[in-house]
Amino acid sequence: MPPAQLPEALGPILDLLDMAGIAVFALTGAVVAAVKRQTFVTFLFFAVVTGIGGGTVRDLLIGAPVFWVHENWTLLICFGAALAVWLSPARLWKGKTLLWLDAAGLAAYATFGAAKGLAFGLAPLPAFGMGVLTGCLGGIVRDVLAGEPSILMRRELYVTVAALSAALLVGLSLAGMPGGIAGPIAFAAGFALRGAAIWRGWSLPAYER
Amino acid sequence: MPPAQLPEALGPILDLLDMAGIAVFALTGAVVAAVKRQTFVTFLFFAVVTGIGGGTVRDLLIGAPVFWVHENWTLLICFGAALAVWLSPARLWKGKTLLWLDAAGLAAYATFGAAKGLAFGLAPLPAFGMGVLTGCLGGIVRDVLAGEPSILMRRELYVTVAALSAALLVGLSLAGMPGGIAGPIAFAAGFALRGAAIWRGWSLPAYER
Amino acid sequence: MPPAQLPEALGPILDLLDMAGIAVFALTGAVVAAVKRQTFVTFLFFAVVTGIGGGTVRDLLIGAPVFWVHENWTLLICFGAALAVWLSPARLWKGKTLLWLDAAGLAAYATFGAAKGLAFGLAPLPAFGMGVLTGCLGGIVRDVLAGEPSILMRRELYVTVAALSAALLVGLSLAGMPGGIAGPIAFAAGFALRGAAIWRGWSLPAYER
Image (cartoon, rainbow over all chains, first blue to last red; front, side, top):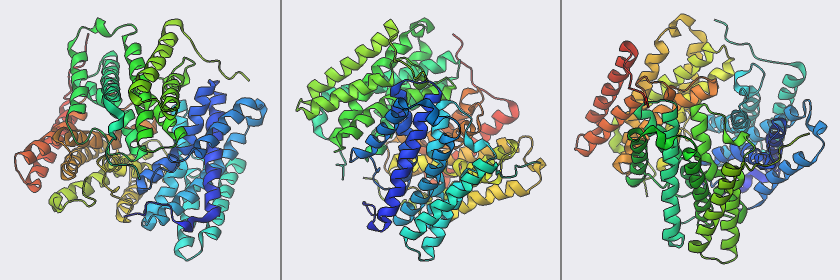
């Protein structure tokens, strides 16, 4: 049985990754709502679903209490992100801003998701899978709801990024490294790889037969 | 830890809203199947997914046992709704019937979802969010499965309606009003607002920058 | 309260159906990724989501611990399926291979899902619904993610097949037949019906009013 509370062991640095993941994914959700010229209520909806979607599924899968239902601040972060995008000049969110925010959310959630999976007693491969799935999920749901082609179907490095962060966190933790060191390493490696994909256009070879 | 059983406090009036939400959402699911000229089995599938989708996600999120798995009647209501649409004259479901049924389901589920959230000890903002999310979810899933553009992307008042019902239920309950009074008020206000949106074409301003 | 562990009663034959369902659904996910000319990482993602999607939702709904999070082998099966499709000659997966694999997964998961529902104390109708929903879910999610029209919207016998397997398993079990006999019968009947639908083009009449 997994413990009902998140173990202390995750520590403050991983908590920061968690909050960063929520905030930047919520921003990307609100930016998609802006690009699609939606109403403020849709901004809120997209910010919330994108911000907490991945973590919610993670908690359901590992048998943890869903992280945002017993306090108000998680939703306040998402509402704040929606308001920030609504009120700020549109040029702030033009170009590649969305991609970079999404990159940070992806690496942060993949790292934190894998760490939380380990903390709840998952086997290594499922803990890795939890990082990948929950890192990618918020963005996938955001794209499906907006009627955009999913990032899954492009050759660009994306799921691979979540896989790198999650694998590093699981591998380094199993090797005995504390989460406060393994977390930042896993996050930075994933963010750098996604950055290279955005900046240099790195992509994987596709199936050609 | 949330209690394993739904508190008595929700009472018979909120139970009625719950059953009404299931029945009318199931009807809307079956009507969409009819509009798309589907088979009876698809009628059943759409009726079930639309009728119980929102409440199922709500129960998973708040840590309640999923409401329809330990008795037969919820699914029987959904099957009955599918049969009713299959057997009745098509003109009954033409025009705006679907919209009005959906309006009733939306306000009922938003109210009941928020009340059930509070009853399971959620913080006010998540209880509000539970009402909004679960009020809107059945219809969103129905539209995605049918390949229709989601109501989320239109400027019409829709999510706002769920927000009004959920906010009223949470606010009035926190102010000390019993659920048997706050519930009908929250339902009626949401239904009236959605009615104005359907009848008068009320909508929210969109992001224009 | 449902028991925390899967009852012994499900037995080795139903376990085989479970593993078969995972493997063939994982294969179909990887084949869809191949048809869409995706990268290997997307092969893995599709294999995992399709292979374990239906069973994951089933476990969440019936309150069972999610079946794949406490060991490594389930994900290894899915990874193996992705690798097999990536490395093997494309002609193996051309034509109707995908349809037949999907047929086996559908009947296996519908049977096993209904049996697990009964084993966790569900009422008969929800146990039946659990078989149908989880038998169909993996394939539906696979198609939605790939941007394909869902099987749900075609007249071909598909959901009906899951309904036949699930109804037989529930009915025969309630009549006292052991799972080791009822399971293979329910699986074979569903697979045969789906086979007839693929081979002979059997379909249901659509709503025509």
